[in-house]
Length: 531
Image (cartoon, rainbow, N blue to C red; front, top):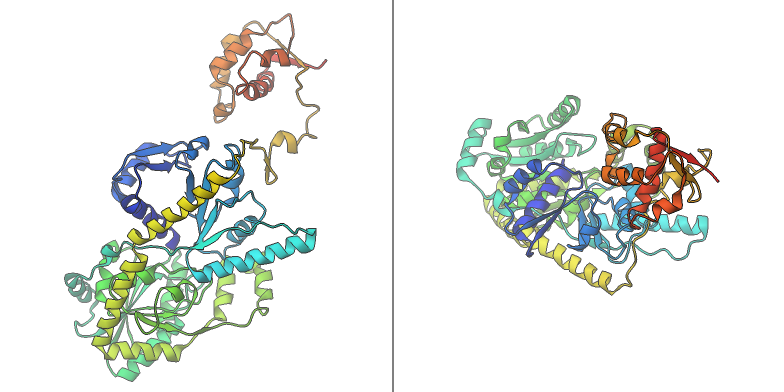
């Protein structure tokens, strides 16, 4: 998946090109360091010391002052940040596909979550930023029409493209010779390369590419080869894509290279003369393979679509082929079906892409021109290679992120400090003892009393804390030491007031101790009574 490749690329680029004295890495999934350190060694190794921040340590995130989340999912962390104080650090996210229903929900939520002026969502292309702005404007209009809301702070959007490690795509004549021999592509023949997922539904329909290649082959009168590198996780999708690609270009020689051949992933670019990718699907948002092809020195024939539009300069690095869709307002039924689960995820993208026309005639003209003229291929390929290094290389992209974080830090530091708040006031994730307060008979109060139920309670405590029924909740309970201290304050004969017990602990410990009293009652070690 492109977002996985982009995420790893960002981390590699950050480790290699960030101008920092120390790297802060947040272990949000609480993975063993033995799993994470080899990853850094493979990607880096880091040229500066690394500080790991534990999964729940949001106060520790104040040290770097910014948290970058490699998705648009900022809502949850914006609520969680309030436990450390909203001014303790900035949040940035980045778009990949923005057409999935849960991602659209995340984007809509930017207007109602505690997103601050020192936070930002990075859009990978102007086209994506326009789409996000369109959705946010519709959400703001709904809030105004439904609730009369007039003050809706805008979410800050900035455009920074995805990056590539351009040096990974250097032309290799030996690789060209090897893979042309493996694929039975004559040395003197022209070959176009498609590189990506084999999915008609969620990537692109190969029919326009096949039609354009067929016309180009007939116009030039020379053999044309089409190398398709990729695959799909479902055999059905993989087969459907291959069949659709072959159906429209009977005179073109197809050569499939599966992702199961990892040795080809880098060298396969050198086997081609032209990069061809006619995206027609809103699941796509940037198109990382386009700057990769440019870095490899390939002229591109791509659709004038989403992020492709801001990557390839028409007539300079290749050709951007016209696309046409129905006017706004004619897709309400598609949106309704998608929102209500009719046809599913793949069905929505399949339907939408059926109504994206790529100008096959223009694509055929562009391909024929490149097939006929090696000098044109060389000139455009050189321009593409230079642009990839000047615009899309991580050594250029990472400083843009650092400038953004610096500006967000300036805003954050200029804002009045905001003290930490309870973590249970998120309306989408309320404190369960608040939300479900009507479920129990009553809640424990400070005026209630506590007494031991049996003399051997201290001896039983460790065994209960290690019981399978408690496993997984240990981090939420008072520590064994705290619990032993608490039990030592209790008597079998003389009830103690909850307020008196809490007063003997530090303020930061009291919520755990108070909650722990209920836990001790659950396992029969104490009895709770109301006055």
